[in-house]
Amino acid sequence: MAKHNDGTEANTLVKEGLLDESEAADYLGLSPRTLQNWRVRGGGPDYVKLSGRMVRYRLVDLNDWVAESIQNSTSEDCDET
Image 1: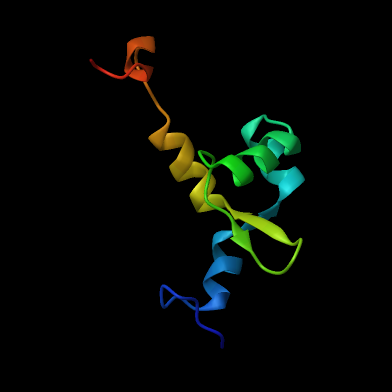
Image 2: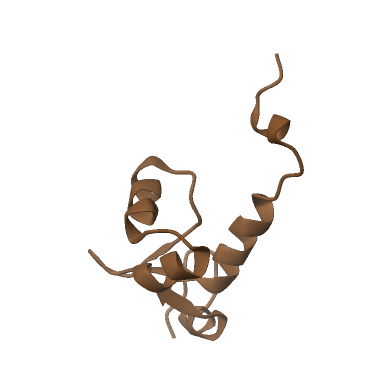
């Protein structure tokens, strides 16, 4: 079985749930275009690039990204000066 750079086996991705771009966008309530823009600019959830145009999102990464984005005040967005 193929191993990834982090030492995990390829089968782990399947067990954790892989979503295509449309499924991931639906899950997050976003448009696929938003995910595309984030892949170019950064700032979005981690993704898996399986081949040239085949991009997938692990469900665990989507959930982690949402959890990391939780805030309790709009002032948390601002940099302190």
